[in-house]
Image (cartoon, rainbow, N blue to C red; front, top):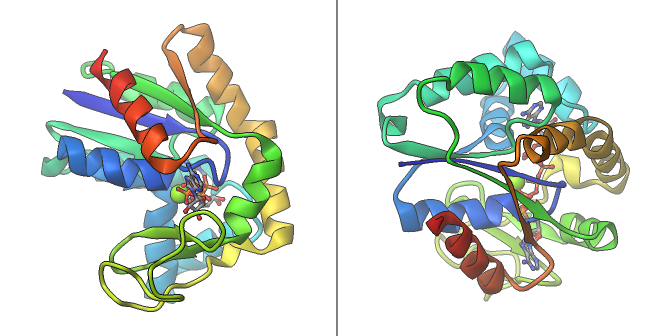
Length: 214
Ligand code: AP5
Ligand code: MG
């Protein structure tokens, strides 16, 4: 049984690795960021507008919204044999609420994918995303075979709205101000495992697989 959390700075590679790990372990990949992007894409609802007002500035969506969305998702049948959380928790309160919720089936692995700050900016501004296939590319580090097109689905690649330079800077600040407290919470509980995310994608994946074995 795997109840995994990937935590780490924006652009660290959580989504890239989560996609690979979840295929390997056959468990659902639950990204709160992806859930919010799907909500915003669906269009006009009060909730979508509220979410957009935070995500577009690189701020955290309020806990009462994100916690409901996450708990609703992990209560679904496909999560009964495990799941990987990508981007949740990202505050001390979220980490504590999650522990309380999972009393009977606690997290099995909490993994920090850590990357030096200078690299993150290029990772995020160079990111290109395929919405349908969920594949993530990078024009500098991990380009698609045909420029602007997904290797798997052929669809056009997009630039995420929150990858604008000014939003990226704020996301990094929010990570330091709020998410690092959740990292420290897990470190203090001695459950935090750290994998360096600067190496190439396959090397990081191999290291994650090792960590997930124990
Ligand atoms: P979210 O979508 O979770 O964004 P994030 O945490 O900022 O993380 P990213 O998706 O930007 O980075 P990543 O670590 O997944 O990296 P990736 O694999 O893409 O959240 C978005 C927003 O939603 C938040 O700002 C917030 O507003 C809201 N939200 C979400 N969860 C919330 C919560 N719990 N509470 C409150 N609000 C919440 O990789 C990045 C790039 O690098 C790609 O181009 C990739 O190709 C490249 N790359 C990856 N690995 C490597 C490598 N090893 N070598 C070279 N390049 C690499
Ligand atoms: Mg991501």
